Image 1 (cartoon, one colour):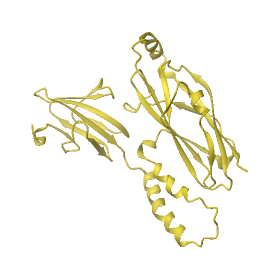
Image 2: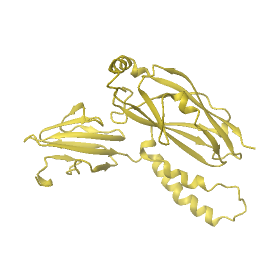
Image 3: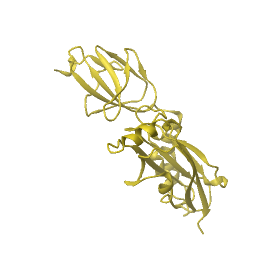
Length: 262
């Protein structure tokens, strides 16, 4: 079948199919003949979509399209709407390097890394970030709830996964900082839910927190990406079933402690 014969359009255009990723920067509207389902990473159905439905939240999505002849196609989407923050960061990336090269080089303590760390502000970072600003003293604990990256909800269950981000900020400060992560009050953790940091797997957030420490220079920022996943356990289905009854309430408290690096 030719691509022009595919009877589904996203924003009035025929999308790329199967393993090719379709990227959009505005709400995605659907027009099709047949049936369309939103599915998870394991291609399990989550929700049936209707004609003229729109996808509005930033994130990754997989659609299962069944046309009127029962042909099946999978469509991968990434929605990343531009925000005011995006344009501010873009402007920063243009202006700051120009200022750096035009200004007299009298202050050798300025950390150029701050100019380029902004590149880490990917669209998926927006909404899942927990910012700790070391310029204002000790930070309070912040409540972290896990969001499934496919459905963008806190309704996690076996087979779901996602990520969240810790941003450390010393922009405007005049001290190098030694930082350390602290966690408390973990509630209703599923037995088989695990965390990943730099390709290392952790069985609990407490275990992971012990590896989140280090140095951050003055006038800079650092972003730490923490991934989580809840795999099916064929040998312990009873635990998954029991944990699933309380998983919507899973959360914990996090804070970052910073001390001057003398």
